[in-house]
Length: 291
Length: 291
Image (cartoon, rainbow over all chains, first blue to last red; front, side, top):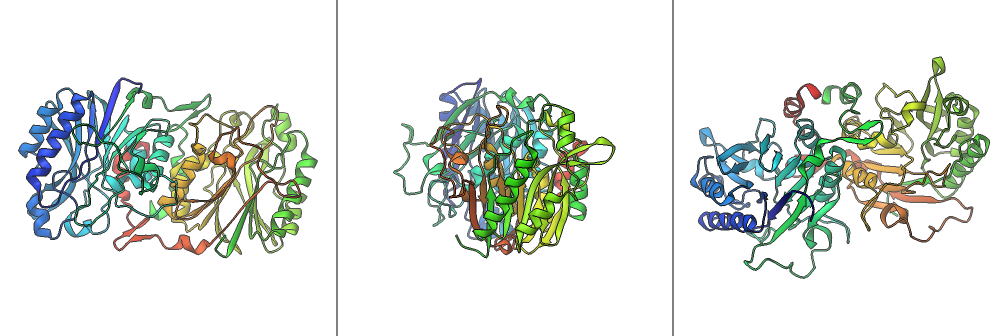
């Protein structure tokens, strides 16, 4: 591992309907990641609630406000590190959002509401309407997306244009078909987004068979040149691999070192700059009314 | 191979300064690809001229107007097929463009001028200002990009929004560093673009050591789900592999069958549509002035 920042993604297995256990596990995960030297800790999407809600009522009862005590616990466990993780957010008028919080020792720095909802999430969540945040932290300039958001190149491009150096992306990737030997499609998409924007991307997936849903368990940390720095075997190989070696405390942690400052220079040849080469006039003409 | 359309990319080795040989070789390539059953033939970028010009004067002297006889020869050789290939285009006022032509039995259907110029291309070429085309053909609705253009997600997204089913992408990929066992970065980018847009993409690279420039030789055909249907070993493995087996006539051809109509349905779950899920309002707010 090289670079001044250690990024650690803790691939937890939250359980729907067991919120207290989920909360305790998430705090332990932050503490363990930080004890191992992490400066940026990424937790999965909906880590406090689990994913497969059975009813709108259950989603509402699992939802937390951004000032819930659990985030203060994350902040205490974080020490000098920065923590990004997903949760079901209780908004106004009974609305629930699929959100992510960024926390450091000062507390909650930002809350982001997932813009692009996946499949049955439409039943439980209201989509966000605000652009994803870019926050200056002790771990660099961090952008936040949630899962399916990342599959929209407009989002990753926009965060790069805003100066994000590292994207922290809580995800829950349902396992989908892929050819033998290929990485998960979401990882291929993240690698490309990193490469075309010179942006590091840390995707923290979840594990566990929560109410029968099987997950990719594809946690992957990608450097600003688009190459994978660390990944679970599941992210790359077949789902039939032996169980991945976990840490002594039973947590699955993917760690990599990188230099957030590497993302600042978009120069890729004597005459090329990844953002400077953009031709918004041409894109506007191409997209037309669909823009 | 499955699907009604056979796509064939002929990975030629044009030589700068040998325009007549390049032209003859390109016509033979089209004939060979069509004889093998291709309905869409893709040739490399700048296939009539070679790439590494030594002077502006040489670039100008290699440049052809869109009504040059060579394209009528491609049209004759095409029969019922569609051909897309790159050439140096002679424009007005001594300008030269890095262009691609789409030809069928009726002749030249469209000419596209590369929007994003790579490195020293700025010395020889004027960038295009018109959006890339989408053309209805006997081989489906074909979009055209050239090499570095494809690394701008705005371009692939825009072509998908315009209804393109297959992108024909003439490229000249200079060999760049990559980790052992990884595909060329341009291929990863193309796979992601195919996946997030449900769009087939055929990238035809070149071969040969033209004036010392070493190429990736990474020709790859990608299906609308983002998976590679056919590729050269160089596209995937290390550059040190044994020479790739060529066809009996000495041409290196990558062929795959696909169904262009597969690209029309952007539905990816009961509640998701790759284009319908876009949130232009959020992207506009995110990009701000950089849009």
